Image (cartoon, rainbow, N blue to C red):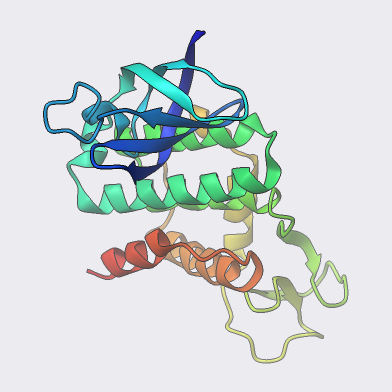
Length: 243
């Protein structure tokens, strides 16, 4: 039966000489779809079956098997992202990260919605590092390693907090401080804002550049230490950010 699904391609894998298999992330799960002949130069499906394609996909749906692609109706081509190597790097990382998190949870449509809204905000021109960090913060809870930003991670003390440590995984108070890198406590307020904000509602960002970079550094280290995820797209993004 021909079925229409809305989603975004998070992975593509060559299949045979000219075909490919795509994984489409939707608000109802991940759908595997066989795209016959899509890698052919003259194929009408060539453009619409690439990673980062956000579209309505008409497929011959097969439960628990590969569905077959019929046609693609693109919703947003993400032209600004695709014309900028830095933005492409952020987008690729967000696709890979959301895909991996979704595979571990299976039933959270919020992951799909937050991913789409994050990509749309980057396409609109909002700071890609901030938008990426906001999504990273929101995804931590799904991975079971959400941040504790209310008390000392060591003793539970809510007073005399001196720093935020990625190594120890949270706030550190004066009594438990052991020479960790000191970061401004104002950063905690911004990260809490990242938790609470609705990505779709963001229209502008007014955050100090030093705070943005400090939060990005913290989250990068925290993901490395606590999530168990290794993504090549993240390594490439780190390289691009340094250029």
